[in-house]
Amino acid sequence: MNDLLPANISVMQLSLVAAVLVALVVFLIRRRRGAVRTLASVLNNIAYERLEGLIIPKADEGEIQIDHLILTAEGLLIIEIKDVNGAVFGSDKMEQWTVISDDKRFTFNNPQPALYDRVAAVRQIVRQVPVAGRVVFLDGATFTKGVPSLVCDLDQLQEQFGDPDKDSAKVKIEAFIPHWAQIKARAEQ
Image (tube, rainbow, N blue to C red; front, side, top):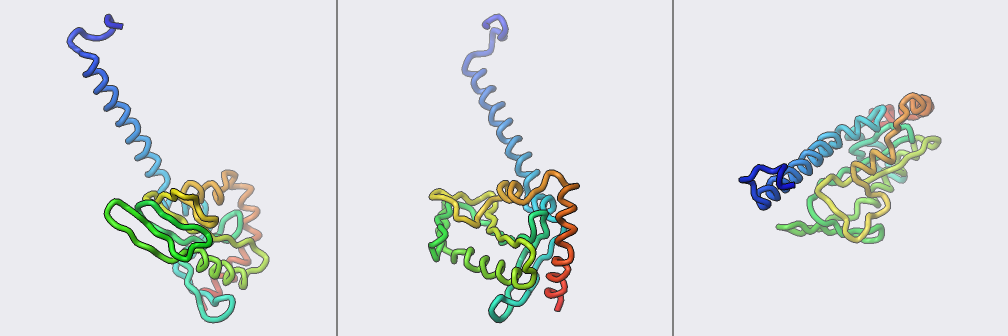
């Protein structure tokens, strides 16, 4: 091995170069992964159509706002986005969830009950179509004590609602189009 290295390079210098190369490779992999998996790219990949900021009647009375309603090959998907940095402590049954980061701590209401209300409102309009809801946490959040049932990250959202076979998915989408038109009409009223 000594014959392969120039005489003036020490083991310490070689270790340093190797560490820098490993760090560079890790950085490039993470950067590429982040670039491929942005919120917009995932939504564009799973959505055949989407509505944003719509207001529809609630299942019981009043109105409810939906930030993102997406037509997917699996049916309709309601998405609530959470962009927080730090460790998130929350569960299905906790009323308040806590985020702890390096420099701050804050709480917010469990977003799942409001998501249930949104799903019920959409189901009230289109009863024959599967309707799902997800609270999507972006990359800055980590759940250290387990992930609540309706929570996912971008990778999981892509995995659950992305369809690699776009041709067969179009057949499913065609069946959902009349119901999608009902939602659009109701949102425009």
